[in-house]
Length: 214
Image 1 (cartoon, rainbow, N blue to C red):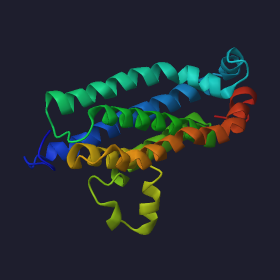
Image 2 (image 1 turned 90 degrees about the vertical axis):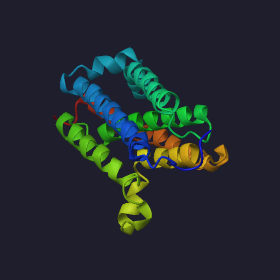
Image 3 (image 1 turned 180 degrees about the vertical axis):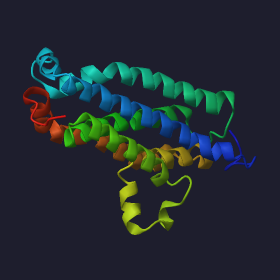
Image 4 (image 1 turned 90 degrees about the horizontal axis):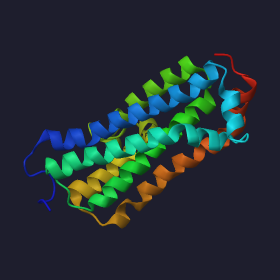
């Protein structure tokens, strides 16, 4: 373990432990949106859903699972690099930090599905995703305290999975707080997983009926 905080006053410790997962989250979200909307754009999504026995949820999980596996491995490798090779502060539990990263990445994928459910058009969905992921980095609070933002932006920050992952990272890496102090943020990340279910009817219209022209 390291002394609490950042005894080396290294800006990289503060910056990269959030910005690198932020970029990783941006990549997995954009790739997920592109992968789903490409099926709609090419008019192949109806066959895709048919192979999943008509289940939108099964179709999406099957489509995104290879990317989920790849980015999970990449994320864990990133944590190994930062906290084991570079030996940046890790005053909490390393395994829990990896668990939090996985929850965060899956929340970003779920957000991608939500965006497609809201706007099934490829170009618009990718544009919204780009804007959302970039703003998420600013709203996470690692460069400017969320408490000092306007109330509207404070509320908006809760919609950014990176905000919750950032709070867990601070608790585990710098402060070394017990795991129970971060369970609420884990729960908030898991809420993002549920949201796409409410867009299933709209997604099915897009996949099967092509009700939303690209």
